[in-house]
Length: 78
Image (cartoon, one colour):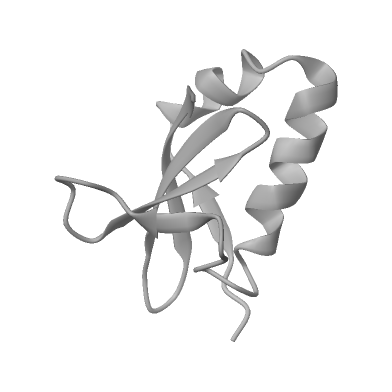
């Protein structure tokens, strides 16, 4: 089931701070979550029930998987 992806307002400036070339690759990795919300490079977020972490391109994307959508909560350097 393909789910839409929503980025929380607090995560938008974090995404804009990622260098341009890496941001394109990171955005592509985030887009893949719509079809596969638990890829091999993801894991449950420690200490954050219901959230997962995607490690990609030197960044950690914290997100949750809902019935209707994927929500991106934070993007931080790994």
